[in-house]
Image (cartoon, rainbow, N blue to C red):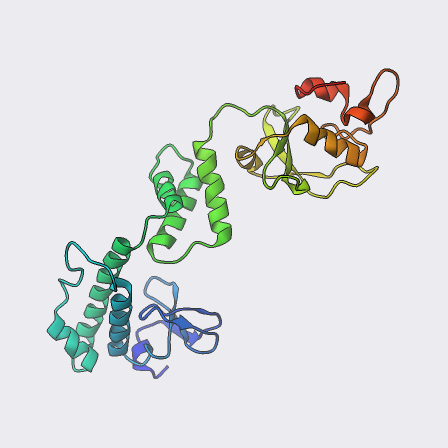
Length: 289
């Protein structure tokens, strides 16, 4: 590519997705700007205004710093290490390319200091930072937490899915280690069938596991429960279901929500009326009759 400002990147293509320019922080659009591989092997977005020269990139970075710092005061000047006379030469295009590149690196450092000073702390990110530094945490959790912290520290917003996964991990770490009682739980909106979960203990392993209701209750059909990996941590954010909620599932399907057996009124049993069977009532500490 003949554009001087992009010559130092190992690979440059027309951007294929919306993004944010590394230098000026303006939005980039598909087909209107560039994507380049930086020295760390990561793709970055570059807008058409900042692409032509390093001088343009320096000018764009200065604009982003001005916008970020507007309305804020600082205990010390984040730009104290920037030589303003050299900065003027760089923006004018009269400075040596190596000097211009060094100025760009210096401005990035100053912008990071300003961003940390003006951006409120994200409680979730700080909790992840603690997990990343916790030698007692599992290697997998530490690696995942460190990855998200690095993303946040680089100024990239965590996606909704990342925040949900991180929230579950943080909640699981802070939850009591005593096992939850087996039974029916509600995790989520009240009255929503997808909020129902079952905790069971494996007959062979002796380990507890969680299953979630994955289909709406249908009259005459068994309830559809599905195992969820990591579900125990999610259930800790919920509450035990009430007897009325357990009965409601039984009345809706004519099957016990705990064992999925069809409810009957044979002999002295009153399972149809109660909404669950007498054995399951005893096992789960629910009233009977």
